[in-house]
Length: 271
Image (cartoon, rainbow, N blue to C red; front, side):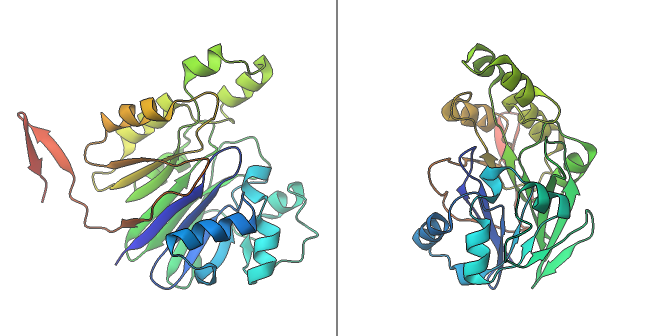
């Protein structure tokens, strides 16, 4: 059994994450246009007809920009809380909106999607874990600080989309106004590289095979340095930078990952 995952886009210009098995798939957020989503999926050999649901994390435009057109064109139900729908001004759209409740799994074919609360400056923000045959993939972005819900689910994942939004030094020395820097660094803003790394090193399960570092700031981060930082602490996990300009390759996630660890200067394969 396996899940396929890709980031179709990740950043303040739009977020959209694909997670699916051989029969059905879901999108977490739809922050790029329907046309661009179609193009990127086509380049990857993925079909929109396979997408059976869209899950919306919160109402900011970089997470909902394409949802109305996409949902109506393909008749895809949108799982969204009433507060998110209202504050995102989506309450008059003609797509099928389905409310969800934290910690109550939603079944989409053979996929099980569990929402859980997170800290972010939105009306009713949630993160998600998608599960299939014992494989868990989490989407952990737009988080001001790792709360107990995030930590609990991150520790269960075989793969994760993990926010690493900004480098503290670059943000502090950058041109953003003080109020925006304060908002980004607050407990309801975004995860810094250091916060993301601490979550990764302290709570990563030994079977986590892939981490897609997501929602990087264009102005306040350095993708090359970020990847180097995580690679030094990867412990066998493949580190991927999710681009704000294009889709990532498709990654296949299973529950048979055997991490490489160092012991007395030699690599041992854990069986």
